[in-house]
Figure (tube, rainbow, N blue to C red):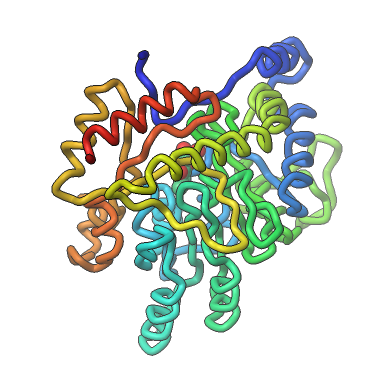
Length: 383
Ligand SMILES: *Cc1c(COP(=O)(O)O)cnc(C)c1O
């Protein structure tokens, strides 16, 4: 058996042909494929606006900028996520805090969020933005998050980097029915790839305009946004300090081709998850709960075992050429974040999670034979 990674892109001949067509066309950056990709992505999720950028981290940063996050503001997210979920707020000069996870869903615990909001209100330290993370592709309880955002007056960015292709209460994740902005990533391990890439979804034309402006140096070519009439056809204005976070037409060509197979690939991911669940019913391990009305996009398949066994199991799987992984080390325990005064034990469920978690191989091209080998290798260790 060859090495089995935990995740792998699915690139096919038809994808390659589309990229070659883009390379042979007049545009390799800022061409027609980017706009088409954005419009097809918007149709797919149901959001009115989609703006693609060079990676998911840049998209998170753009989302924070568009919502006006800056010095003096607080942004809250989940400790069990990739560091980009909170770094995006630090880029804007804001301060970061965390909300603990629900031990069953591994996602932000909305009851813990309410308690923390009530405490923050008394201290006059309410967050400007909260960023729930849809871990492994399972949507957070966004309906509750939205109720809280109205009650306490903060904005919501969904970190949907794992979750494109998933459903929540009859809508695709990214519809922004319950949030201001949803962000996804097109990194090769994610459910849809452009090499590097990301996207902000929103239903607000004002936020969309800001995202597009910050994505390209803070520059606009739209006369409606300018402070004076255009001097001529060459004219543009810089209205804010933005970045170059653009994506290329070559990448958009890949994304457009990938998007055609997204639903098919999500269905395969869900079948793989189903087989794991069937195989594991009698084993001493826990899996992420499936919540009502939610269809996970299964970017990852995470299990939890006894903390005393976890490292040995990890090594046992790696020795068998199975590329297990760990998502994630709680962000507040990273040395960089330790300067910010987060006590150990501050987010007990997240630290409990970290002691037990392992991610198993999960990608559309994982064969039945490979998956059986993963299950058998795991069983041999645990029974
Ligand atoms: C991948 C990921 C990001 C960052 O996306 P990049 O495209 O790698 O920059 C942010 N948040 C989460 C939860 C991710 O998994």
